[in-house]
Image (cartoon, rainbow, N blue to C red):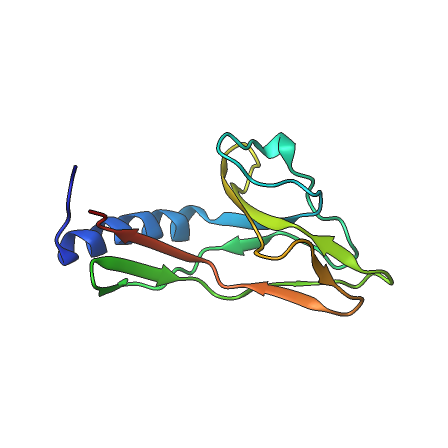
Length: 135
């Protein structure tokens, strides 16, 4: 098992954040009642399509990362999605991909399913990346 010093954790996350800031990644919402499991692929998820929806580019992770108790963290700006439809939007989670939709990075369900976004309502996500030593 590999353990990093606090400086090493910060540097490792800095490299990753700089890569994301340079290339940008997109955060997207999915609307099908899928429970994310190991082995999830992009084809398992149905991207949101309600009026007002668009992917949000993540390219502003804060640097340098903060390091506390063997955890380095960096956050991005709020990713805000607004429902301009006349009906509720049921959202089950979010996923992160590259701009070309060729690389799928990860997906996560919201804690309570579904998350209902009413007409003219919004849902916001504060993306955060962390690295940590686990013993």
